[in-house]
Every structure is written in C-alpha cells, then in structure tokens.
Length: 173
Image 1 (tube, rainbow, N blue to C red):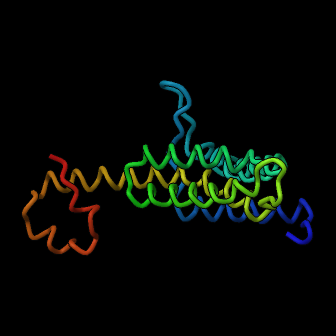
Image 2: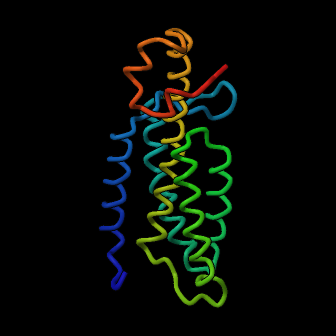
C-alpha cells in the first residue's frame, strides 16, 4: 500500500481472482431471485462474478471512514459464525471477527491506522466468496446426511471414511 495501482490494473486483477474463484468453487446452476423467478446458469455466473468485484471495491471504498469497515465486519462475522452449519466456517469467521476486533481499537475515531487496499479488498473478497463456499459446504453436509441414512451408522463404510473427521461422524438422529 505504499503506492496505489492504476484502476485498470486493479480491475483486471480483481476480474482474474473472481473468475478463478468461480472456476474453483463452481458456477451455480441458477440464482433464485424471488419465489419462482430464477436466473439461468450464465446469468448466475455473471452475477457472482460481478458480486465478488463489487464487494471488494465496496469494502475498499468504506475503508476511508474511521471504524466503519471493521465495525460492520465484526458484527457480520460474529453473526455468520453463529448461523453457519460448518464448524470450519464458524471458526474462520470468528477468527476474522477477533482479528478485526483488535484492529478496531486502532481504527476508531480518530483513526491511527487504516486497512489500506490490501486489507479492505481482501475482506470484501472474503465475505463475497464466503456465501458461495457456505452453500457448497451445506450441500456437502446434506450429502453426508443422506449417505449416513442409506448406509447405516455402524457400517464399515464409516471406518473407511473415518479420516474425514467429525463431518462424517455427525449424529443426525
């Protein structure tokens, strides 16, 4: 953050990161808008692509106000840490909330330090991508539930998959 990059270079890098994220996580088949209204796969992919870029730049824009990004992110991270079903995502969001809680002391009015582009753009990317990752983890969680109901609780299948840890050993009864 010693020097600012030109906007064109930042946008190209953010577009590459957003495209790489969607390639790694996968593009949804559709996005539900309201009730029975859906966006097809192409538009859903474009929505997520623009959403990641938008949130990254929105967080960067809000970083100029003393304590705004840190306060909102702490509240959101704690809330997401409470509602997420995946233990890993809960821990991850609560770690981010704790780190920003410590940072907030220095960022409160009058701010002694700011996040800069590297911190604020990362947080925007993190929380915009986290929504997609949570949907993927929820599907995996449900898949584990269905496999467990079909195979049975005490079968050899779970002994083979035992190295997957508590995800597969969750009791759904």
